[in-house]
Length: 214
Image 1: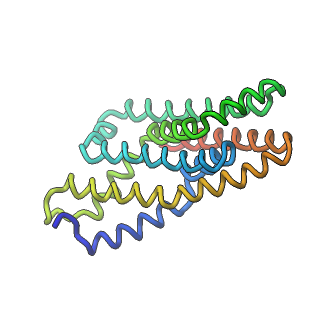
Image 2: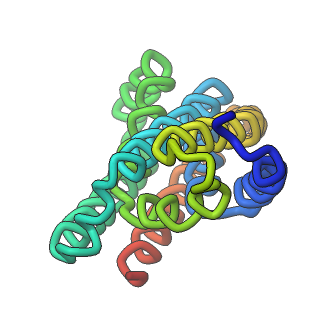
Image 3: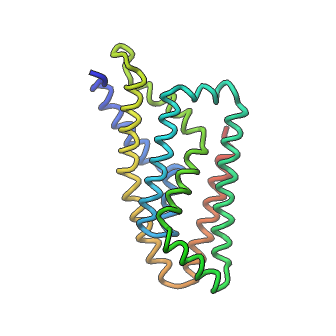
């Protein structure tokens, strides 16, 4: 037996609560979905899950210790994440201020590749948040049993379950946000501009949150 099933039940409950409570990842998923449609919302949820997978792998193999020993690495990742969010804010605001011809071009690009674009944005944003690595280092071991041995395997199993729970909850949320956003955007071009500018403001807010916390 690799998993302590008594601890596993508590882990599932804690993981569900953790994912349900709105945080930066959920805000990102809702924002991308509202701008690019229901499929893009689901893709954004998948991107967050992919980024979470990367963080869990890093935590399992012990590379998170590098962030503790070398603060400069942590800061580089953090500020790279801030920069990428600001880039998303700029590109989103620019789409809102585009001329009619430019807006059609932007819209066509998003129609052709909304899923890939949303998945990439969510994955990069999540991967560039070193806090997720440190959180998993602190969170996952609480539900592993040293007496059973195979600690890396236990952490890997718990991490995989966390990823599944994350996508199972965030995926439908992304789809709903995309459906609602699509209805708003099709109402008028003014609505589209408001959605874009609101999304840009949210991206700036997320960048400020990441920059202000350490």
